Amino acid sequence: MSGRSALKRVDWLTVFLYISLIGIGWLNIYSSTFSEDHPSIFNFGQLYGKQLFFIGVSLVSIVVVLSLEASFYERFSSLLYIISGVLLLGLFVFGKTIAGATSWYNLGFFNFQPSEFAKIATALALAKYLSDIQTDIKRRKDQFYAFLIILIPALLIIPQPDPGSALVFFALIFVLFREGLPLFYLGIGLLTIVVFITTLMFGTIWVAIVLALLIALFLLLKRSSFKVPILPLLSMFVVAVAFSLSVNFVFNSVFEQRHRDRFSLWLRLEKDPQKLEEIRKTIGYNTYQSEKAIESGGFFGKGFLEGTRTKGDFVPEQHTDYIFSTVGEEWGFLGTTTVVLLFTLLLLRLVYLSERQKNAFSRMYGYGVISILLIHYFINIGMVIGVLPTIGIPLPFFSYGGSGLLGFTILLFILLRLDANRLNEWL
Image (cartoon, rainbow, N blue to C red; front, side, top):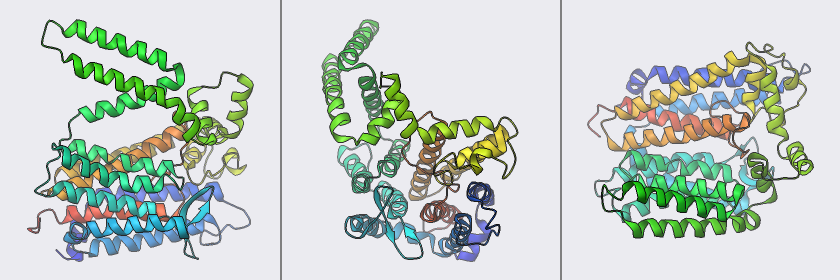
């Protein structure tokens, strides 16, 4: 199917939601970076002017994405994945360091972040591998290779250091669950997170006691109904306790001080009130000011360009990771609810589009898009309102940044291109 035909059959509801989000996002970037000395929206020396330029580039990229044959994305997915890996490796030699992370290439007119391209390439490569007729996600060997596809770019990004971007790749594991990966792995993942957090909060001894009591209760309740696999339960207990014993070493020796401070603030690990307050004023300053900005907006907000905390630069980096706080202050509860609803509708629409695909590759890629957008959306808003620790993840289509906006746009419109072609016989 030609690009012109694809344009006619593109899902316009998704396009409307996309345009709504980037439009509202730009208004809030304009507000958070507005200067009375530079009132023109076309001033490309200002951040809002640059973002307007990036929006234009993203719109051009949509035309390119829709013009390519749908089969291109499946056929060249492996090559794109390899290129993304080479670009990530190149950062260790040619990368530019910004805010302590060597995550960008300096192209002169703008900084390019290859991890945004790697998200697209990994989603495509994973969909390609899983849709192969010889792949069975229930086999251990195929599970290993699927996990490896996800793990390689994450391992290349962590040392930059950029743990926030690396975390996004692990969201692609949800694609595996959609395609039949045993829920056992989800249980292991949740148990790992719970053991890690509870060990930091209460220590290994209490973790071991609680686990022992839970296993004993399970054995007591299930003893009469069926034969209980005692050996696997004991093995799980030993592994969980061993992992718990390693948590403090990882926390104190592997994590950087800024990461330890963020966990200390989030979980209230620091018992000294004075020291906790010092951490709150440094590492937790952004979140504290963000919470206050949203709280001050009330129900209706203070009005466009009327946010006192926004105009006073109380929230550092407000135009990037903390852009949602501008919505809260100037548009209030009504504004934040509108943004949350738009994102929710977009994600639900993408689920619908993914499920109606006739081709396994398109469906799996669709769920890859959903996973990436969902984790960005969930963590960013949770971070801004203080529910989750700060890890530097932008809000899709909303936060300032050319690489991010371009990456999310291409990610989304590849799915729309595949969807427009779903009835064709190349599938």
